[in-house]
Image (cartoon, rainbow, N blue to C red; front, side, top):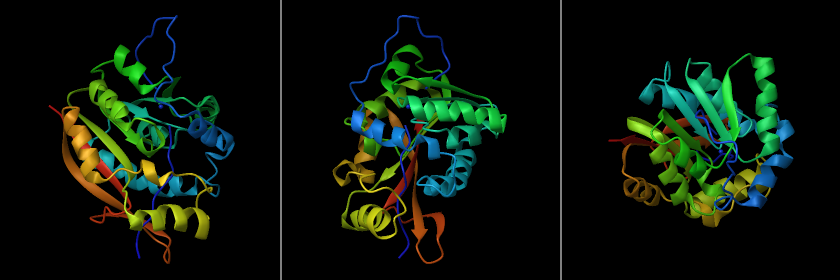
Length: 255
């Protein structure tokens, strides 16, 4: 009985946008943005609703670093939220830009830099707008726990593919869609164990690994690794492994 899921995060960048640039909101769900904005002040509290994000962050960070070697790389964290992953990658000497569409989450992320002393460039901008202005400028693009919170995940995947340099890597994480993931990620995590606020996830937006892989191929990305993220409710320990039935991560390479 080893599984679970996680929370989502949110959208950022490093190139200069024209001063009259406007943010495309067409592929953003205002309800989803508000959902995480309401909790933004708790983002860095490891005992809050974001506890799962804090606990899985070392696993995600090590996975990305092991496959892509973060030191010295330019990284875009799409859907950065309050900056948990962004700061961690910056701590491994990556040059990190974090983007999100939640003002409150970005304010929390920027404030936390004063406490941590890390350097991250945070921006409020949609990933599609970022791709239009900064194509091919990043060694690594991460988009974790976000695809299940947007109306059109394919649009996000295409934008991420456009943003990464040829030879660069893109990382996605999301939730599988099957009865088991519904039981663990929605019923178990939100209603039984109270690990996440009720209503955090919409089962209809979950993505099967085969669907995500096809979307990646359509965006000219080659899937190089598929790894599951499991949670043992008895030991309360998260782990990476072969079981992708609930939470999973995908690593992609751009030719």
